[in-house]
Image (cartoon, rainbow, N blue to C red; front, side):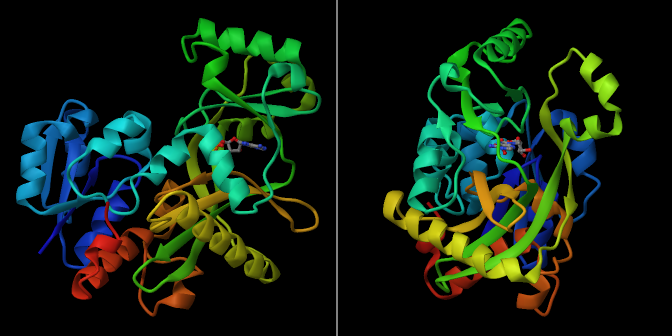
Length: 341
Ligand code: AMP
C-alpha cells in the first residue's frame, strides 16, 4: 500500500488523518522543534525529522520516502518555504499538478490564469504612479498576508514600502504587486476536481481571520487614526461560512471555468483541491483576487465534513480524506498517473 506524506505544518493533521481513514500509511516530514506536537497524534505512523523543510530534497529523506512508495501532498508551507524550481525538481511523486504551483507563486502568471478563466479580477497596477483609488500592495508567493498594506496614493505607497524595507520584510518594489482593492464580504471557495471522475465538487467555504486588519474594527475611528503602524493581513485562523443557495450555481461555473482554463494553460490541469478567493458585492457578484492551486488551510474547519461535502458524501469527508480517496480510486482504476506529477 502506498504511503501518504506531507510537511508538518498548515493542514498536515487533516491530510494525514484523512489518509489514515482511507487505509494509507502516513508519514510526516517534521521539523525537530515540532516533534512533540505531532507525536500527540496516533494516526501519524512515521516522522522524518529535519532541521528545515527543504531537506525534503536530501538523498536520505528521498530514499526513505521512495522506500515507502510515498506520495507527497503539497500545501501552503511547501510553497512558502521552497522555490518553484525546487518543488518541480522533487523526485517523489506529488499529488496534483506540481507545475501549476508556479502559477500560484508568480503574480503575473496567476493573473493570466484567472483572466483565462473569465473570472472577475481586480485591475493590477504596473507602477505605483497608477494608484488612484484604494489599492492593496501584496507580496509574491504564499506570504499569508504578512507585509501587505493598503494605500491610496504613490506618496503613501512609498512611505509604507520604505517602512517594510527598513523592517527587512521586503527588499524593494519588485517584491510587491499592486492591485485595486475589491470591496465586499470575503469568501474563500474550496473545490476539488477529480480527473478520475472528470467532475468538480464544491467542498466548502470559509473566511479568514487576519491580523491586524480584522482587529481594527474593534477600535473606535479616533484611535484608528492615531495608530501609526501598517496593519497587516496575516492569517491567524479561519471561520466557517455558508452561502446563499442562489449563489451556488455561479460558484460551480467559476470552478469549472478555472479547471478548463488550467487544462489549456498548464497541463495536466487543476487536479485535486483548489480555492478561489475573493469578495461578494451587494449584488452577489464575486471578484476573485487570488487562487490557491492546492489544499488551503481553511479546509481544516471541516475535518468531519462540511455542509457542502455532506451533500455529496454519506460519510464524513474532509478535504484531506478526499485527496486520499482520489489516490485510492485512481490506483484501483489503474489511473494513478492522472493524479500525480
Ligand atoms: P492574498 O495573499 O492575495 O490571499 O491576500 C491576503 C488577504 O489580503 C486576503 O485574504 C484579503 O483579506 C486581502 N486582499 C488581497 N487582495 C485583495 C483585493 N484585491 N481586494 C481586497 N482585499 C484583498
